[in-house]
Length: 529
Picture (cartoon, rainbow, N blue to C red):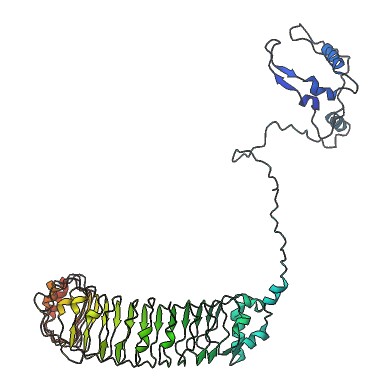
């Protein structure tokens, strides 16, 4: 049997030995299975011959066997690598001896964690990145993909100076390269000195959001059909082509030179339209916008509202008609879904409505020429502003059960005929600029938090003022003739008190009142000369 230099002293047959305990034959002893050890016998030796030879060498456990030592007998050393190394070391002492390799009887343990350290195996699936797969485009896709460079972009986007064009290139390259700009879905070209946009859909066929405000555009056409947001405010637009823009939802065209719209029937998805500060005279072109929710016509040349007579739109919720030349409020009853209406700064003298606007919540009617108003036409009103009119009479206030904020400032020093008790449920009252000398009428205003009564010729506060409106947080009483403020000392929630230009002379009385106002954090007692 040959021995390898890397093996230990024990033979491969010894490794196959198994320890077993046999009670009939004495203590435990190594047992060598003949079938497994037959491979270690000499070539040609059968199993019976092997058993016969080993029987004479192995004494029975029960026999009285003794070992005899013969000093003249030279032992036969096994020709292993260890004997060879020891012999060579005796012959040449200067030659270093190789230490014996010990048999590892136990698995290697980590001394710190006392856990078995397993050898890491390489994963079956490697973690290397796979090479990129090149997807070849079909001929049809190659035809659809536009070949875009700076030259084609300069034809599509024209500017007043070349410096602006360089800025546009930089803006595009923030998201992608020039050759791949056709993939863009959002593009911001505000304040770039753009004078014209020619067939923008050829260079940006997937564009969804476009901003071109504060430029010098005079017309817009050839826009991508995928647009849903377009902002072109502060330009010089005279005309705009909105055909095929069925996905457009928000359109901002304020501060331009538009006077009319040709065809808006294809804008089926439009929800917000802002055309403030233009030269629009008629509203007929907006009849086809059945899904419109917000419409701003602020600062145009609209004189009459008869165009809204056939405007059957239940979706419109906000309408801004301020800063026009409207003389009469009429023909808007068909806007049954309207929630907010702004009519500030017009020339409205009368309100001619055939039926109540039941869903209207916010109405701004300031700076007009109203003489009277029937509040019953707005039963669900929450905010009503009537400042700077010529109102003499207000009726139907008892029908507004949900009114929260009411403003009636500056009615030309005219005493307004109104039953103030119907406004007990309001939270904010603005009554400055009109004669309101007696506060005795204001009883049980428990919801009132904000009261403004400046320049109303008030000379004296009622002694029960704190009981009439106990939850006041802000009180403006400037430009009156009040000398005594002691009725205010029990307003425990009062935070702001403004008493500019009154007739208060005793500072000690003011200090005594302020000491009782625990939540007061702002007090103004100036006397403006």
